[in-house]
Length: 115
Image: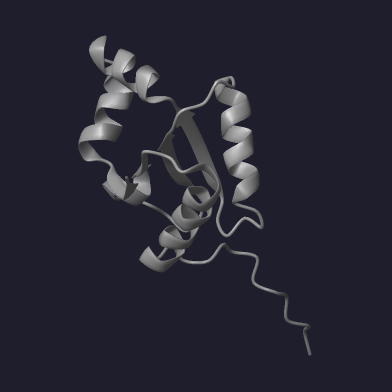
């Protein structure tokens, strides 16, 4: 008889799970907006796909520090995630120079939270 192994797959990405992640971020950082992007927003997500979030909020920290702080707030991690944190001024600048990556996130991403 073989021993059953625990299921190591991440939980299914549901609206409830995304709302819980957004709630944790909002509770601590009070961002202007949280946008889901990537395969979970645009389709094509697989079982091993991570959740991509853009968090728009005021901060005087460097982008990597901001992302690390927001990421820590999401522990324990409910899902594998990549979190980008940009200030409103950074978003405005990137859109002003026609950044295709950020433009797609803003235009086609799914807003999870907006102040």
